[in-house]
Amino acid sequence: MLGSFSPNDWVVYTREKHSLSPGPRAKNISPSPYGEMYSYEVDKYWIVRLVKEDELVLETRRGKVHTLPTSDMRLRKASFWERTFFSHLFPPKNSAPQNLNPGAPNVSH
Image (cartoon, rainbow, N blue to C red; front, side):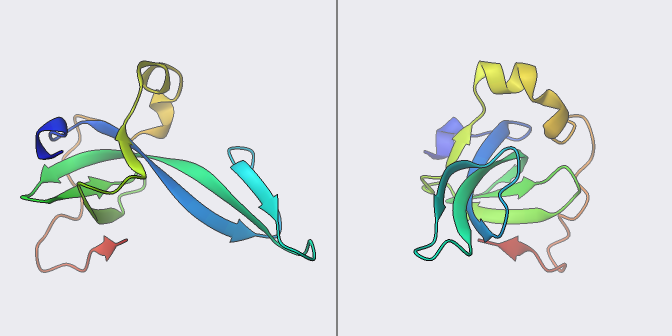
């Protein structure tokens, strides 16, 4: 899967979340057994900043950096429709990476 991602690709990462009230972009919503919490999935719109041997360095719209393996099944390239209608949710392609300093702590999932 290494060849399928390159720097500046927009990607979508599906993250599982739990809370009292799912937001408007939540999908696959299911209540807990007693109904006090919900589990759901939310698509996160990120950009590939760096491609390493078997992992990707991704950046969020707000500048957070995540390192994920290229084999993560929750990660995929953005579709044509996502690139068209949700382009405002992705980080800009032409901006310089903000937190890619190797000495800086990265958030990994």
